[in-house]
Image 1 (cartoon, rainbow, N blue to C red):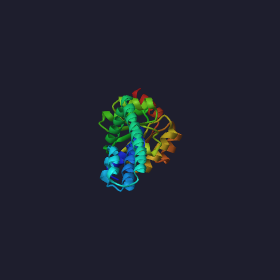
Image 2: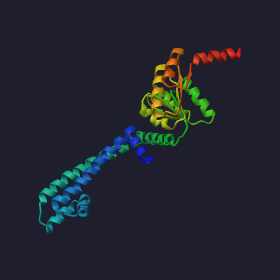
Image 3: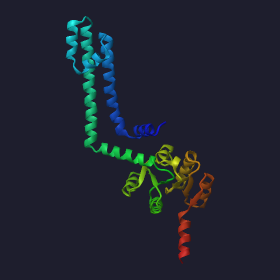
Image 4: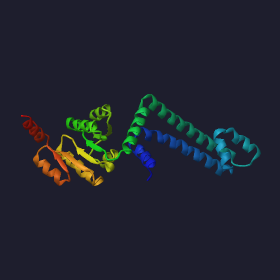
Length: 252
């Protein structure tokens, strides 16, 4: 699958506005195809002439002034097709206008730009969770010049990551599709930074399946969770309470 095709498929899969806009456009295209094909089959005209009838229905009347055929049937069919085209055209227009004035188009374009930037990263760090710990990790990595992608399920935290000019993916980092959106397959390191050891261990398991060569760093609540995290494949386990305690002692 080519890069551009994958971007398009991902966009359609995760962008509700694009899906909303595609449906009426597909409906318009379906009526166009049905109209051209139907006129050609019923009247025996060429596809070019049949297409012209869609734009100028009066040509149907002129055609049957000099040709024999099911004029009434073709006219009835034209009414159905033109009604469908008008209806689907209005649907497409309403969808576009409501999206434009509602700011959804700009939001979707920003999301697509964000996804494209993530897709271009290599050897970056995926930080799962943007609480106090995750925010600190992401900030320090940025200071070190590392590329960072945050995965955060809470909308407020996700927005804070964007406000900090970080690349971010909204969603549950335990889901493989969210990790894939964060480019985990090309990441050098994955950090489970959520305030829940069990979730971080689940993230480590999912990340190890998708990117076996990535370094896995897991935040754990205590030493028991540390043992579980290492059995799950974590290369490094951080217990914040122990680290902070050791730091305090070193400063005494």
